[in-house]
Length: 106
Image (cartoon, rainbow, N blue to C red; front, top):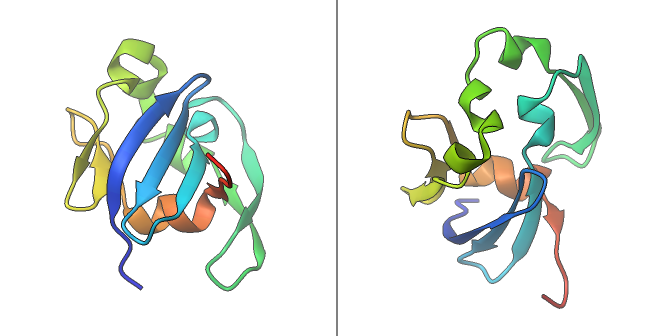
């Protein structure tokens, strides 16, 4: 499925609220991508299986290193249905949709 983010809201503690074109809202926690943790557990794959992500692969490359600066983190914008920061760190809409938590009643 082709998901599109139509609105992104910055929340405290490196969280994002993504509003999708299909009417769903998802809460996405960026903290595991920018903090020093060796493994992140509990994300669900598109097939519904629990998966682990080896964070070292991300942090060693420094892809999201700048996002630790909260003023820079707040510069997120929607680009081609996904999200991006000024120095081209980006995440697809699929990532936020499948790894985000469904928000109800907000």
